[in-house]
Each structure stands twice: as structure tokens, then as C-alpha cells.
Image (cartoon, rainbow, N blue to C red; front, side, top):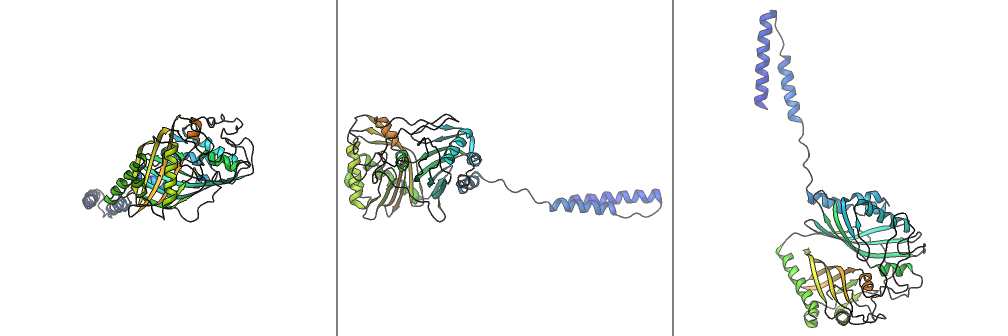
Length: 388
């Protein structure tokens, strides 16, 4: 800028000399002053703000994810997704594109005029994040799971595994919650104790836990892998080595909580009896802080009874997401999410769930009335895909 100013001054001086020669009278240096002022004005113009990084855009979307849901604004819900995004809810047909995702949100709002979402925790690493949430509402309109309003209160916990693009928009979401639990909460004939009663919205700000990629996190993933190996191999002693009397587990497909080594043991053995050839694939697994997040699919054969449901000897599969917190190599907390309807459909215990065409009246769900989560077997058999 100093060179530019100097050139402007020189040019102004040349003009001054020429003018004096022609007009025979002095001139002012207004031209030079104007050029210098313009240069100063250019120098004072601030540079444009830096473009937000993909991580910053992703964090912004995560932070405000619940707002359009609580405002009942289906268009803004869909605006958080890429135009060709995909929403996968195990047990239901896939939703492809913004219009379909917006329609799914509209159906929720139509069924529950006081629909609310509360976020418990978020975990993130790279372009992946997991959101733990709770939804509540009074059913005062038709839903895909109840053709008529029931007037009953729901409170269901779930988790979403989301993938983001560089623009901070969601390209894919896998949304996990137990559909039979929801339908049982809507069913006045459902027997208390066979399903998880409605829970309330969380209070306070959600925890935001981001992976830092530290060596300690890598070791924690190895600990989790050893836990899953013990479960898949039905090695009771090895599995129980990860539990303590303070281990707390919330299996949201079952009616009750699990606490301590003994209940942990009973749950594992009940599960091994139901599906003795259990196997798992785990395409997503990462640590964030002292938590390990695992998304995967369980496969096996239902060779044991699940409460009133007899052994079918049919192959089954179920998608799941586990959120496990470790303290000193032991399980402190274990939150696990899946939809038991996936397996119930496969063994013929309930018909597939279909969704009404846009604008059509909702049909009642195929979930068996009063079945609860249908995973109850004494306390509750763990849903497939969980290392327990």
C-alpha cells in the first residue's frame, strides 16, 4: 500500500505541474489527497470471515437438532438433512430424501400435539455422531401405530447414529428405538411390567463428548472388543470380568434396568439360551472420552423361548447401537438400543409394520396387543446384538 500511495502522489504532482504551465496559476493537491484517502479506505476494509470448517458446521447442526422438533416445524427438521439423505428406522421402511423425512416428522406431530424431544448425550468422531434422546407426548391423533387417538402418554428413549457431509447436513441417520415398547405404552390392555413404562424428558444441558483420538481412547476400544469377544464366545467368566456390583445397564427394549454382577450374569445366560449361535458385525466402533460406541448387527438362530414365545429355530438378525462407559477397565454404564420388532417379524411373532401412503389414514400397527417389548423372559431377555 505504501508503493501505491507514492505513485498516486507522484502522478498528482505531474498533473499539478502541467496545470500551472497552462493556466499560469497555482493548483491545490486535492487529487493526491483523494488518492491517498482512497488507498486508506481500501486498507481499512476488513477481510471476509473464514468459512466454517465441516467440524464446526456439524457441531452447529448437532447443537440445534432438537429445536425444530420442539417447535413442531417439519420443514426445518428436514432442512438439517441433505436433499438426498436417508433415514433408517429398524422395523420400518426407509425414508429417502427430504420430502419423506419431512413427512415422517409431520406424522409424529399429528399424533402428539405436545411432542417433545430431549437430548441426553451426544458423541462424535470425524463425520459420525451419536445422539441419545427421549421423546414424550400425549397421543391425541392418529399415528402409524394407532389408527385412533388413545389419549395415552408415551415416553421412549432412543439413539440416532448420524453421518454428516462437509456442509454440516445429515446424509444418513439410523434411528433406534423399540417399537413394541411404544405400541405397548399406547395399548390400555398391555400388562404393566411386560414393557418399559413411559419415561420423562431429561433435565439440564446434554453432555457433549467428542473423541480426541488419544492413545487412551484406542486402548478403550480394545477393551470393548475383548468384552464383545467374550460375549460372542459365551465365555461367562471372561465376560463377568468386566462387570462389578455397581455396573448399571439400561436395555431399552426390556421392561426393567439391570444392576450388578448377578443380574448381568443372568441376562447373558438367558440370551445365550435364546440365541446360542450369536454372531455380530460391528461396522462402526469408536471411543469418545471414557465411552465406547458400537453400531452393528447381530445374527443367529432363535433356539430358545422368549417368555411366552416358543423357539422357532428360525434365523434372526437385529441392528443395534451400544453406548458403554468404562471406568478402570470395568463397565460403569451400558445403554443399549434396538427394535425387538425386527426379530419378532422374522420369527413370525408379529406381522411386518407398514406405513400408510401419504395422505392416507394410518393403519394400526402389527405389533401384538399387550405384548410389551415381547423380549420379557423373567426379567427380560437382552435384545440381540448386545454384549451382555
